[in-house]
Length: 593
Image 1 (cartoon, helix red, strand yellow):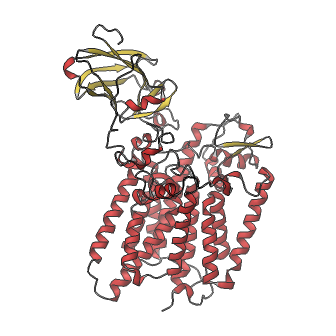
Image 2 (tube, rainbow, N blue to C red):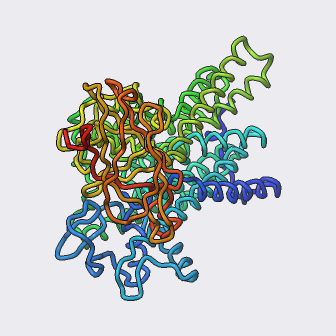
Image 3 (cartoon, rainbow, N blue to C red):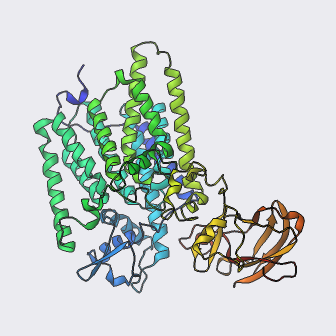
């Protein structure tokens, strides 16, 4: 029997879902939005800083220039061209977010103060709320896409795995990465492609072209989606695909006109192919596939589960042309990523740079489950079907667990900064403490003697002494992040001594009376005190000889650690306890040694 996509296509009719499906889709949207909004780990303010400011600027001033806001220099998120300042990252996110900012205006929220200055504290809450909303809408869309072919139970299973077992949970719902809008738009495109394949009806080609061009404007690597779809339509629809090409060409012409007007180039710098050097060779490709901390197959084993089912049930696969499009986009995306020297994506969680592939993974899942069900309908299950399904289930649960770490654990984020992953990329290949195990595994070492002048926490090399519970360097100190933090050091002497700690507490802008601090060494409590002075002060802890070891772990417990975003309405989501400036060993007489 011919594939449905190759059958004659009748005139378009209205897509319809049952009231139950629409109700379930709406419930999924509401529940996922609530879950995304209440997950503790939020990442606003990184690459996405100024994206909401640009949307606000478009709403207020109808232009793309940002020099009126006196933003800091230098800033990798900004560039100067022709006397104007522009947002470096793709402009599509900001343009598409304008309606959202308009609604926020009606609620009295804005990233621009009354005096016209930029309000950084206001931007992060706005962007993480939009990210949560878009990914909640994507979750509902995944369910409706699955329902085009699968029963309710399987559709819910695919939705749960796709939303909570991928970068949707760990990355895309945490901040307005450019992929956040991109994945939503490509998800809509995937629906528009899959629906006619299941119902023998013509796709809405102008709408499909519009969505895919804007997905490219949002994220340049989505050019592969546009190119792949053009070929797919040319093969399946032949001469009837011209509305797609005509609409795409019109949008792209407008984009080129925008780029020429503002940057005097055919495309902005971020979109230029010259950014791809391919100098790292196969290592970048392997890293994006199997790096313990960035590999797609490691961080999203759901992909392996879908592949396993497709191979097992390959004889009953339908929609083979659409499967070919999925594989083309996925393989092409991985090939393009191998051209970036900075292939791990900097400070992020897991396989962030392959987040664009989520909609195609969803289609792989749906096609795989459809093939499984088609095989069962043909006859008795073959030997090994239950085993392959069980393995796929375990991999899916593992995928959910790994991506949950990115949504719940600050320690997984701090893995990027202690030490800086951009300065120690060799850690991307280590299985001793991959990022998804960071909340559960203390750094392995080394145990080094404390410097004679004391350990300065503002120094970059201080990370060598730190275990769990620390944020990055801020000036001369580091904040603890969480209810406890550890420091490791070596000590060759056997006599008693004194540790001197220079620290100040987080007082929540005056809302906290102090921070309780319990200090233990190698499991033995040494001292409990309350830090209530807002400035740096020195605190001494007597160390009995019997508690010392050649390798020591000092543990700081702070039960009153609190989040600035709650107490002070800032964009800081850390659990701050104390900021430590220095730790030094004093002799038994209290003199520095």
